[in-house]
Amino acid sequence: MNTESAGVISFGEILLTLRKHIMLILGTTVVVTLVAAIVTVFFMTPKYTSGTQILVNRKMSAEMAGAQLQANQADIQMINTYKDIITSPVVRSSVEKQSNNLPGATDSEVSVATQTNSQVFTINVTSTDPFTSAFVANKTAQVFKKRIVKMMSINNVTIVSKAKANKQPVSPKTKLNLLAGLVLGLILGIGLAFLSEFNDKTVKDEKFLTETLGLNSLGIINEIEQKEINRLIQRKSGGIERSSTHRRRV
Image 1 (spheres, rainbow, N blue to C red):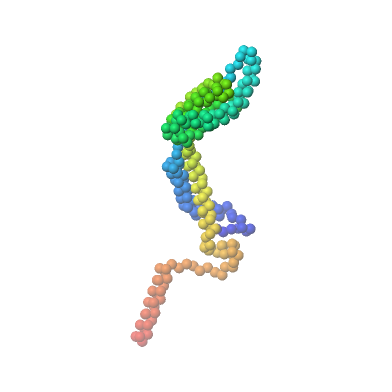
Image 2 (image 1 turned 135 degrees about the horizontal axis):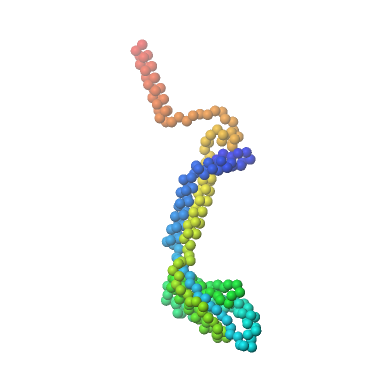
C-alpha cells in the first residue's frame, strides 16, 4: 500500500485495498458466520422461560380502610422481601424435592420481575425444558403462598396467572448470533486485508520507490517471460551454428 505525504493513507488507496482483497474479506465473513451458526445450532443448549404472576395484598379491616393507600405502598416496598423469600433455600429446596426427576430441573434458574408501583410480580423460571420451567414456576408460587403465611402472617396471596409451557426458546438468539458472526467476520476480514497489504513489501511501481521510500529511479527493466528467454536463446544458438557452418565451408 502506498502512502501519501505525512504517512496519510488516501481514501482511494483504502478502496483499492478492499477491492484487491475482496475474496479474502468475503471468505473470512462467510467462515466466521458459518462457525457462529454451527456453534449456535449444535453446541448451545436451548433454554425456555415460563412465568406465573402473583398478587400479595393484605386484608384491611373496616376501621383501617382509610389507610389503604399507605398499606398498598407498604406492600409494594415489601416486594423486595418477597423476592428474597422466593429465591431462598427454604422455598427452593421444597420445590426441588417435587421436581428433581424432571429434565433440567436441577439447573433451573428462578428470578422475580416487578413493575413500578405495582403489587403484582412475576416468578420466572428458565431451564432446558419448557414443561419443567412451567412446573417449577407454578410449584414455586404454591410453596411461597404456603410459607408466607407462617413467616409473615400474610394470608392474602393470589396467583393471578399460572405458568404455561413456552416452547419458544429465549436463548440462544439465533438471529442475533448470526448477525454478530457476520459483523465479526467482516471486521476480521478487513483487518486481515490491511495486514496483508502492509506486510507486502513487493515493489509494484516506480511511485512506491520515489514517493514512499524516497529513492531515485535509475530506470525500468521490463519483465521477460521464460518462454521469450528460451526463444531468444534458441535463436542465438541457431545463429552461432549457422556462422560456424559457414566458416567451415569457407
